[in-house]
Image 1 (cartoon, rainbow, N blue to C red):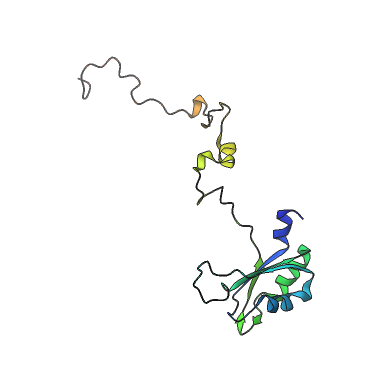
Image 2: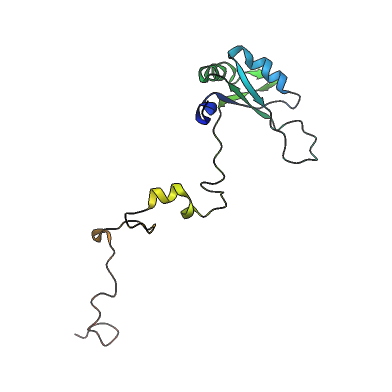
Length: 149
């Protein structure tokens, strides 16, 4: 399965109570189709006593099953909390876009989009788009200030 197809078959489940385990999620979401994986992300800190971060990802084998789960489980009550169930979004690449450690003009996507025909990475500007030089036509003046009358 391609990466894009995997994300289409994955649902985000938000608003989970702290007592919820991955087995509870599996039991609640299995009626909608064959589940490949359930991920219940843990907090980043090592000293945290929280069992999970309050959300999970459920990956189905088929994207139609994921849509069925979204339709049936969004805004439903689960362990006394209202769930927010939606299509999972693919994470942004750490190599591209804002937040990356690489300058934007050094990234492949930006360069391909903004490079001109010159091969120098600068935009291709025609003479019609050029801004006139403000110093043009001042060569004959030897005195600064307004023109004498």
